[in-house]
Length: 115
Length: 114
Image (tube, rainbow over all chains, first blue to last red; front, side, top):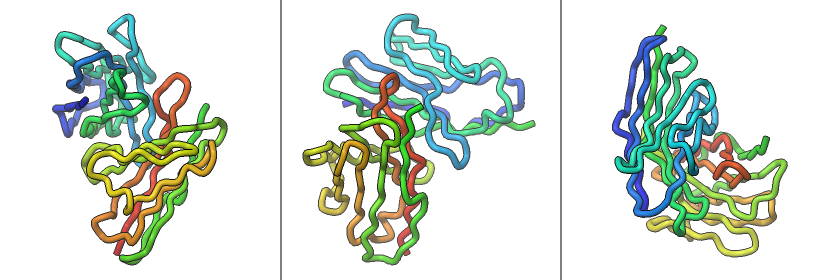
């Protein structure tokens, strides 16, 4: 079975601060990894994904994430956050061995960016 | 881009009522759709996989007789919460696989049972 752990449940930052949200997964095989964002009142949107290749992936809106296989981690980063980044962020994993298209989500991190 | 439409967005009804939620893929066909449930301040939990032309696959602990799923066509899946009770109140989200990402999500349905 696959599982995802997000360590930060609530994060409050000032504009221009740097962001790093932790994500660790548990799965014995090859995985695809994702970060989704849910802005207030909106549906989930894909921020970025890792399938293979360069472990440092760039996403939309200046976000990036690094896959560290030895640590089973896929942390999300942004050098300088904006007020508009206030949202809930979900890490997700799709185990490729029998996982199909099923995603397992972490519990989410609520980010609040203050002016 | 691919869009998934979910209807209704909000339902408030009395205990014992059955509620149907629709999930449509608007510009693509989806032989598979997924139904998730999200409790407040918790993650999305996969409830079941809806399969066009065959029975849905339910996750462990999800009552198939309580949450009826019908994948009537390549663009429509429905979730019916039968004889709903207050503990069924939740946020239900559907999704359908896309080409370059695993799933496109609907906007969700907020179900409140009084």
